[in-house]
Amino acid sequence: MNELEKRSFYSFLGLYIVSSFLFILLAGFWYYTAQKHAFENNEHYRLEHIADRIGTAIIMAHMHGTPLQIPELQGRDIRIALIGTDGRLVSGELPAGLLPDGPDYREYTGRMVLVSDAPKEHLQIRYVIVSSDALFGVLSELREVVLAMMAAIALLAATVAWTLSKLFMRPLHQRVVQTERFVSDVTHELNTPVTALSMAAEQLLSAGRCSEKTLRNITASTRQLYDIYRSLTYLNFAREPETPHAIDLAGVAEKSSAYYRPLMESKQQTLSLQTHPLYFAIPEAEAQLLLGNLIGNAVKYSPPGATVHLEMNAGCLIVRDEGMGIAPEQQHRIFEQFTRATEIGGGFGVGLSIVKRICDAYGITLTLDSAEGKGTQFRLCFPQEASGV
Image (cartoon, rainbow, N blue to C red):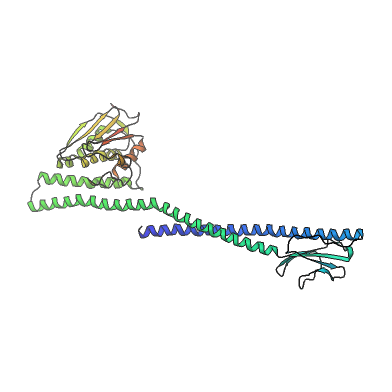
């Protein structure tokens, strides 16, 4: 990854991890608070139940005139104290410094203390005090569990964040690589015709005359430059769309073929052209770009001395070359932007993607038939509204 990709990767990763950790902290705090509240309520009800049982035992002993028997209680954490109506300790162990002055429930010196007036002053007992330290042990275990869960979830979130960041950056990385390659290819493609034009100009200056071959080289190089310009113009997102109008595609095909004739002559190629009028609503510039890319590819990838075929029949236009063909595994990718089927012949991988975009925009059916070593054929079938005369 380059520096820009690294910054984007770590920015996305950091944002994801920080937001995830904040969410985990909030979720952990909410869970701990909810569980703590539930445990506190349970502890309150438990201590209250114990106090009520003892109060009931005191009342029953007073009513029946029998000795007081404290019910057997479960839990070694429980401590019981009985306070008389005179405020003195009747039995049990009172937490140090606790002076009850009415019913209460609170934390006191590391224990939860419940002061209950359940005895109703029977047997001269005013309060039952029940205390326990079990809640704090439960809350300590709860904190450990919550922290462990948060740590595990945070680790999982970090792993997911790393994986998602990689997946997020993969198409971006591919696009960056494609863009870098596109810039490199454009530079290379521009260098070839510019060099040819420079050499031709030097030949003219040194010879003091202009040969037909030099003129053909200048014309071919100039048109290569213009092809690059047209492709880049079409790919410009800020371009203004043109209004479609019915044009004769046969005329466009003939103009496009004539446009590439100097390049074909330089490669000693011939053109087989069979056209008839076919009218279709499309901006002429896009029609020229559509047919020009197909014809230009046929010329580019056909060997010297080959024939480029262009014919029109039954509402379809066919461009066929006698080149190297396209491998089956590459045929489904050649319409992707910045993708080339082969390194031979140059180009920067936008011509066929432009063809596909124009076909999709105007409902033109585009099919490919290619075999390695036998050439490639592109068929454009126009919608029914296209008409021949």
